[in-house]
Image (cartoon, rainbow, N blue to C red; front, side, top):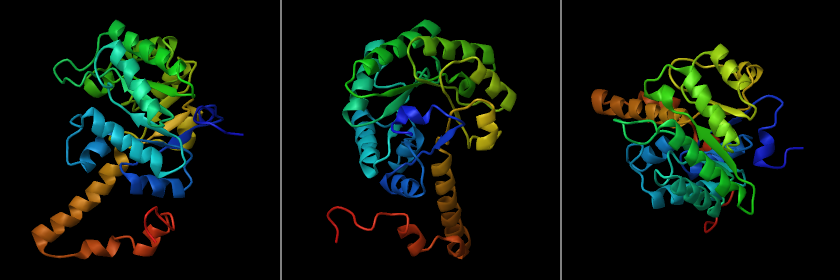
Length: 273
C-alpha cells in the first residue's frame, strides 16, 4: 500500500508527477487521479508575468504554499538553486520548504548565471550534502531531489552528468534528475548507474517516450516540467493572435465548456456558497 510520497518512488514502474502552475490547475490534476504534484518554476513565473528566475524568495514560498493548500496530494517544489549559493543556503531552503508543508523539493547545480551556469563539482556536492543533512533533521519525512543541469547548458558529457548524480546520491539525495536526456538507451544507462530513484522530464523538445518505455528503462518518476503551462499558454497566444491579426474568433470552437471544466473542480470553495 502506498502511504507516502517516498513510497510512490518504490515502483514497480514509474509514476507521473505533473506540474501545475496555479491553484486551478493543481485541483484539476488532482481530480484526474494523479497521486502527487510538483511545482514548475517557469510556470510560476509566467503566471506572475515574469521570466523564469525572476521570482523572489517570498513569492516562491507563497506560490508553493498555495499549491500545497490546493489539494491533499503531496507536493514537491522546483526551487531552482534555492535561496542562495552556499551550502548553508541550501540547508535553509529545505527548512523553509518543509515549514510550508512541502513533501519534497528539487535543488539544481545551475547557478542562475548564464555566464557561469554550473557550480563546480565539489561545491555542487557540498550543497546537496548540506540540504540532505537538513532534510534528515526534520521531524517529517522530506524527499530531496538533486538535479544535474549540464545538458541544458551546452554539455554533451553524459559521463560527467552520471558522475555528478552519483556524487549527489552519495551525499544523501533521495531522487536523481538530469533534465535534457533525449535517448532511451542513455536514460537506461543513467538509471543503471544509480541505486536511488531517477526522475526524467517529458515534454521537452527533441524526444518523448511513453510511461511504459521509461519504466522499462528503469525510471521511477516522470515529471513534465513547464510543458503543460507552455501548452496552455500556446493555445491562449494562438487564440489572441487570431483575434488581433484576423479579427476572427474560430479558436472558440475548440474551447472547453464550462461544465467540463467545473467537473474537475471542487463543488464548494471556502468562503463561497
